[in-house]
Length: 43
Ligand SMILES: [Zn+2]
Image (cartoon, rainbow, N blue to C red; front, side, top):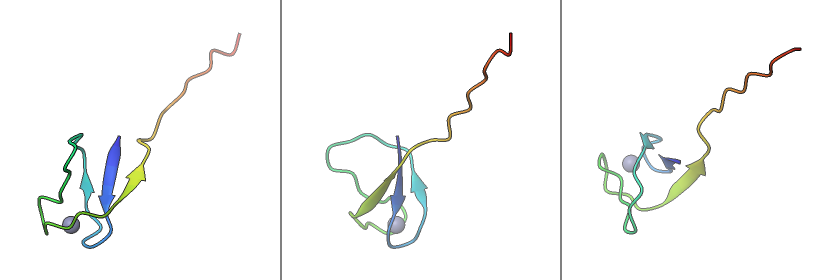
């Protein structure tokens, strides 16, 4: 999972209980799903 800081808009990839932005120390994040590339076998 990826977390996007709502303050500095940086993406943090960390899974901790007390997650905090390492850049600005902000603690409110938007949960972002990593882009999942799905390949469908066309056959
Ligand atoms: Zn931040």
